[in-house]
Image 1 (spheres, rainbow, N blue to C red):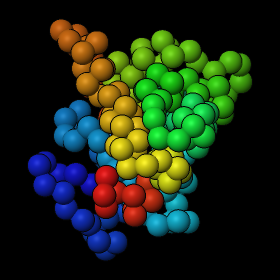
Image 2: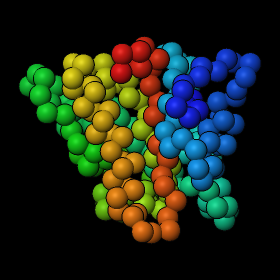
Image 3: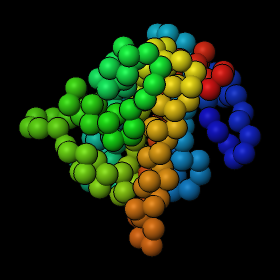
Image 4: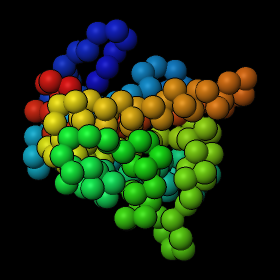
Amino acid sequence: REHGPAVRTLTRAEIVAFDDLLQWQAQAEGPPLYALLGEYGMGKTTHCQRLYAHLRAAREQGEAVRQPLYFDLRKVENLRAATAQGPGKTPVLREVIEDCLRQGYLHEGGEAPRYEDVLTVIDQGALVIFDGLDEVLARLADAQAASFVANLLRVLPEAAERQRGGQAHPPKVLVSCHTQYFRSL
């Protein structure tokens, strides 16, 4: 987890991931980005989905917590088209979110929200969860991978631009990824 300008690796004895995620997302200030890293089968997706469900339940009970938005990056169809044609254009943030919304967004009943609805929630200080970054990075060349991650993280400065002069809290972003992909990224 990022702490100021330096990154410190925490040991298992020092941290319980779910509790740390809850505490981090509740902070109005502090780092806007949390990278949940781990090896295959360690529960990254489980943590992301559990946090999403926990925050939704808390909101339904009237608690003032961030509204979670869960995006499963394995659902990005635009990426499949880009990689089938070889190195080239990677999907921009809007394309990623729209693909995730069409291909299995975690919502209950009815239709998936529109992109504009998602932006409204983000601008109100949402917790944006991008789960499975490693699933995408495994299919991309280094330059495409860097571009894809930069496109995802645009969610923060774009929200700040839309919020300029407003009273909304800035959003936070949780990214889950297999540890090996963060060494070069």
